[in-house]
Length: 564
Image (tube, rainbow, N blue to C red; front, side, top):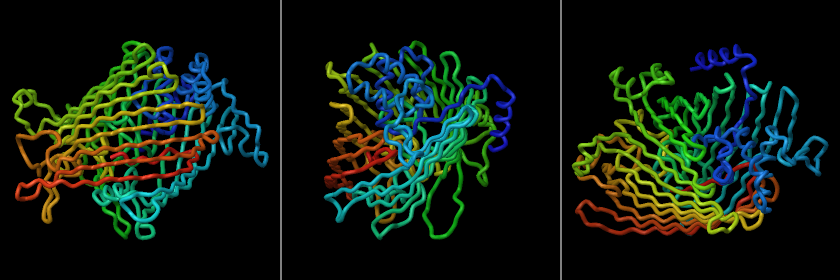
């Protein structure tokens, strides 16, 4: 992998004058990306080269979009948001208004966005502290629940060709009880990697991300690093979400004409067992490519394919490095049982006011078995359909989103952890795994420029696996289980097993004190009604109702969300 990356960089150097200025990426924060989505729906037809299904986005693209918004925004809130995006991407636009009136000790906060920055023709640098302090009360547990994160974020460019980014944070936390239940089930803190106990009931862990980004030609770039990715236009992703922790990756982006072709190669951890001694974890790999086509300025269609595999002693299968071949063909030619999947996604912006989007993920599909309607376990697919409505009912800055996700049992599972669709014991797609129906409704309102009110309702009906004293009956929910130990061959249906009706309500009020400095007041109401199937076939009901209230101060870091 390293030799290939070096070779590609050398080829890029040979291109000389064909290289373009290389940008870094806007760190993935769902609330900031919500603003980008909003203005892309409103004005994206004027920026046809901006493809939005592969995230994070380059700062250069976001700056261009913000410039379009600046030309069209009229109300104070949109002007504030547009100014935020321009200032946050100041080194890619001339339209920012980022000069600070309050310079600290001559060198710090010389602009509004960065604690420290430097800019010259050949080099830019941005340095920012990271802080997240949160305290809350959970009715299911004793004592204060809290998050304490301190860190630093650096990014910049060299010679307008090489971009770099790094983030590191030290964390201690005590989570609400429903999050603790997930930690005990999977033996890992959601979104994170290795952890250790902290003060008996808490968790201590590091978060680290970083990458190098280099322009090989005017239309091709290479990225090497350790980070998360997100594919899709929805709140969830059926393909690749930001739920699992960061992983090592090599990424190629090719953007030319109406096309965006992305190749992603990743090294993943198949199974995590926390021990008190140094231990090298096993490896597995993923190759993913997606071709996005802007058929019109309003309509984008994407075709994607993934394969997850492992070889003896963690060897990479070199044939999957071919960037323009079907992985399923390679899998068949080499005689493997690797986990290949295929799918499509689409986005349709309607009248600069709404967006319709969706995804279809095919893990395995047999048409004859589908037609028979007999619930064959091997028909493993997931689908998503959703819509966004901007300035709903002619009320400025009220944005609505509705989404439906359906995932059949055993989707994303495989014969073992070396080929299933997970990393570090955590699902790569939906955080609740599979075997579910889900309905999501989100209302976001910004009544004044610095104040955001977000209300979410997430209803999920899913079937949990049965855990007994001696065994676990696999009904197709947890992606960590092998499908070879499935409960049924035929007669499967969605939400089978311990059927669970779960409602997650979240009301969050955020106020931006200054650029990227927020205070949040959050209220979560969560009910989970589980039908427990006992060995004698009786069904008992078990309810768990959570009330969690928290207050947070955030500086250059997104909210920590646990929506599963």
